[in-house]
Image 1 (cartoon, each protein chain N blue to C red):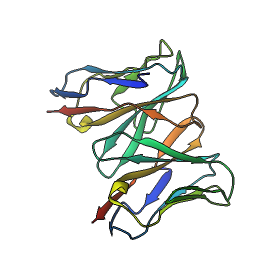
Image 2: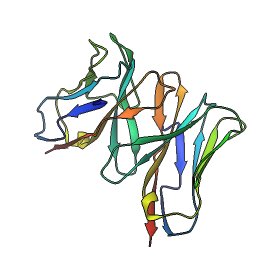
Image 3: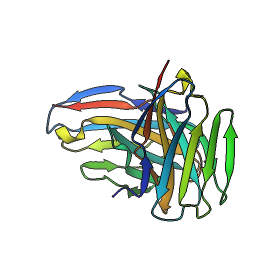
Image 4: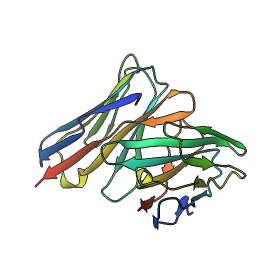
Length: 112
Length: 110
């Protein structure tokens, strides 16, 4: 049982490059979300999805896109990376928003 | 701004001392969740509180949900070095958006 799988674990980008962070879950969860974690800021919600074909913005959506074509996958796209997007990114899933969230191991992203 | 506030940001205690972190929401929450994140790890679910005034215990950890369902606390009795990490509360004050507090970093001196 893999749970929530995030790839890659580490990535270094140059300003202006684009990239997709992958997130997959094998628990048939409807609710999936992306957070970024910065020192002193806790976990801030970027985008979330309540099911395939449905996505919505979180607290800090600017500079990021998401799609949810299947129940299992919820990729996060950085269209034009900026140094302010240097962070640790976590993907989470659960049956719905009021159930316990299962987190992936995170992607550590540095943008130079 | 952040709808779920958490204090303190940081606490350094001597092993054996107690520790408490507090969480406050600007709106009523249907439930509140607590998570622990070890250094270098990912958040791991600890517990969920649903009822007004609810109190739950897990060994040395005591969780409370306020009567108005706007505040919560996590209390650790007699901290141990294994308690080190960041503790987060989380709630959904706005529909399907699960919002986390900024977290309280706990360090334990042995």
